[in-house]
Amino acid sequence: MSNFKYLKISKSKKLRYLSINQNSNLSIVFLHGFMSDIEGDKPKNFLNYCKKRKLGFLAVEYSGHGKSSGKFNNSNISKWTEDVRVSINKIINKKKFILIGSSMGSWLSLNQFKYFKNQIKGFLGIGSGPEFLERLMWKKFSDKVKKEIIQKGIYQLKHGEYEYPITYQLIKDGRKNKVLHKKYKIKIPVTMVHGSKDEVVPVIYSRKILKIFNNAKKKILVIKNGDHSLSNKVSLKKINKELDKILFYQN
Image 1 (cartoon, helix red, strand yellow):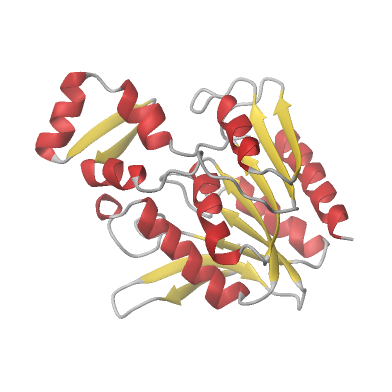
Image 2: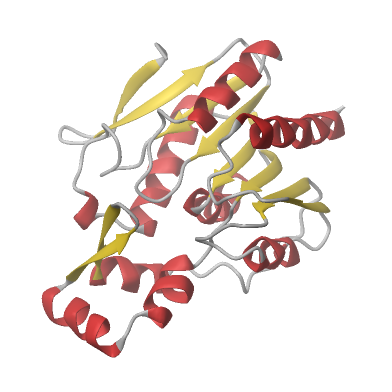
């Protein structure tokens, strides 16, 4: 993908992003997951989707992720939320957009409603994991692991072939960003897509998100045998169809 650019936030901070304009009044904003980036199959899929439909597109890499500046260990939900807010503000500006959040990206998406309520015209979540730091990590850690995080400030969480540095400041900041108790009275289409065999985030979290939206046109699609990523061609084709329905709602 040759559309990568950098948004200069300050002298020492820049965020890598992927975008197309196409002079459209409507854009798709894709927010990736925890320790992910914008080089995967999902951002590529949505970029091509927008090109074919002459829509604007934005995918941004949060600080400490991919090739954006900053250290991951110093980052948290609040900082990543602000990264997204600034990026949308400067690149999408006052135009309308549909949010797509993947895993943690759905949490960051929910945090954008307080800034862009009148611009957001739809929300699609993929394997959504709001409040996962507390609910799916901290509460499941043993007392020994919790003690290590508190004393050392960091714990290397092993998941398969990957290691995730979980800092205590990240956990504490997550508690300041609770979203599942909120109620959004906004009339937009909200669709959650989740894999039936998601090994990272249970499907109940997608259902919890739908309960937040009182007046929305709500739907959940559980993809049979789907994993957490839902990045294969079959899953992406189904997700694109759901996105088509959200677009149709705009007309």
